[in-house]
Image 1 (cartoon, rainbow, N blue to C red):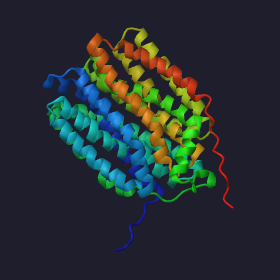
Image 2: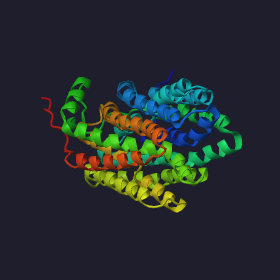
Image 3: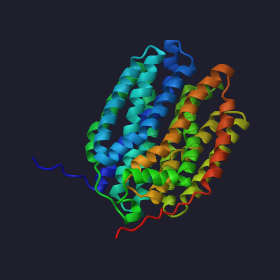
Image 4: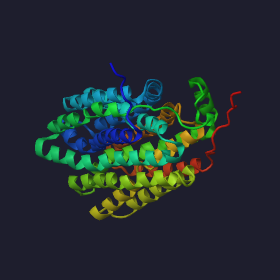
Length: 402
């Protein structure tokens, strides 16, 4: 049999972008299912919130392992497996009638599916397919594709829920997610770019020891914790928050769609700027702007216009942290073990996501308000601004082989 022909970098970018579109777009629509599923099954909001929290925690815990597998055996196999798990998770989610069943569906199956089909796996392959000069821009483009999915699939999910009910909507989305499996065949590693500083001769053990000794590696994780907390809390609870304030489900859907729409431009711009300016300074700017936007939201009366303005602002800042953070990791440690190392940093993001998804439901069920969670989100922005500023972005110094 003839050997499988590796796709070119452009074809890889298209297929990888499609996978991120389907994966992130579908996950972004979960907030629309919170109220109808909770009402149909007699659950409090903490049940759905906890399932989403477990999803994000397991996604983060498994990310170093799936990244390691992708670095060693290629991204294609990991992406294919992730597409299968994600599709099965949506089918199980539709048929869940207990809190445990929902947690297994959203938490375990979708969580592992997301671990195999999201940024770190895709960025690891793309980072090795493109040179360092083009890498930041390419990561920004693929992030923008994920953002487009958040914009495009939300109205589709609302249309399906309104016209067919939430059960049929989940089955339909599972069929769309299954397209990630054939798309995975267009993503293949093509070798490594760069000098020895790019990590070409570094073993797995050496790469881990090198990263764990680097202060900037841990500071990136602390900042990423805040990012995960904020985006999952808003993505999961913002529609319900708006309805609590007298707005409608339509306002919630428009708001989430605006996040996805403006995320396209924000992610692309972050990738462009990351190739020209300090990525850590840009990260501090993103976190600072998020904190200001949240403070303004809860300081004034809520209207549809203010909700849309907040959503557009947060959307512009939504996933810009991803190409910047991964770009810092690649710049410091190289690209050979990029998916695995980014996975370790991403664990902190998902740890924050766990608390953002679960704590939102827990505090609301016990206080009847989300205000405490909003204040925590502001405090985390302040911390993230501080920890990103001192990170040294220079490549680590390695001995040159004789």
